Length: 75
Image 1 (cartoon, rainbow, N blue to C red):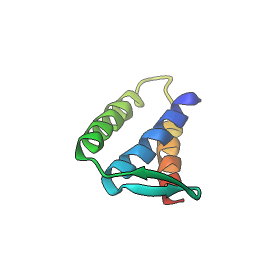
Image 2 (cartoon, rainbow, N blue to C red):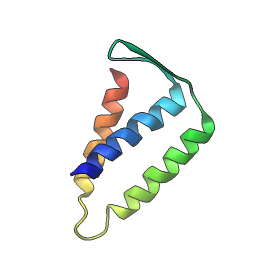
Image 3 (cartoon, rainbow, N blue to C red):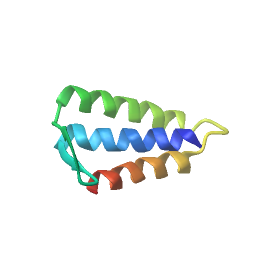
Image 4 (cartoon, rainbow, N blue to C red):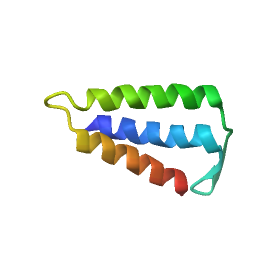
């Protein structure tokens, strides 16, 4: 559901905060690398991954959203 989209956002933010990103889909966005944001995003993703192992929560959906966000970073 919607949590997969949130994980996609966190995947994009995690890589953007580590490497920085100047353009996204041809538009200038000017994201710079930031260690504090990277550390915070990594912590939130780790807590979310632990939460994904609870019954009734889709681990595959969360991981798929995260990978999709990482692929979006490459665009």
